[in-house]
Image 1 (spheres, rainbow, N blue to C red):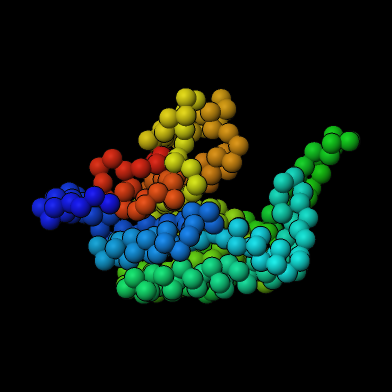
Image 2 (image 1 turned 180 degrees about the vertical axis):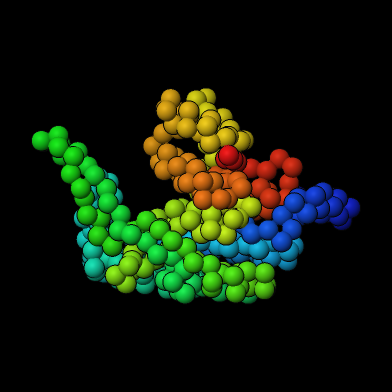
Length: 295
């Protein structure tokens, strides 16, 4: 980093004031993805930024994934996953490892980094305090031979149905930073793995969060000529899905944004989590970063 003069530093801090005021006492949910976590350095910078938010009277809530870490652990233990329609089938042996990695190592690592940076993080999963109840996910695939649509059982995978805020309301606004692993409980008391983006959308909606930031490994939504689209309404986003501008893995991300807005979030931003201080750039600077999707 080039050395900037103390005067420039002061000016930069001063320019952040209106942004800080905009988010004063507001809740911001940040989804921190498996690949966005990157190396230790990146993770520690992320943790510092989260502590900075908390220091400026913003209430951050972190939801994390852990796909790459789960895959590594399954491989180490020699557990082979079956896939259907490109989706991992989570059997009883797999969900045990998923819970171990998400609610255990990944969750506590993030908590450790935030605490090391001077915050007070509390690591939880959607199972704690009955926070997130989910129902088993059903997907259908078209059988390539008979062309008949058939249901696929993805195993212990769920979609959020109900979010109970009792526990989060005990933490938010009391200098505590919740760090949530995307696991939920079914009506039958089974542990279900929930897609981290969807989980973050459900929690952000229930909290009526001012912003949901989805940290991904892409800069945001790109137009046909691969230029970043700074903001989109839900109507625009649906058009871009229909005409194929938004395609592939970006479709479920944008659908999660739309879902979160329908749940009550004010705005959802897709940003590149690998960029240094992405969260601060988005919240505290004029130009922001990524794509903002709003109603």
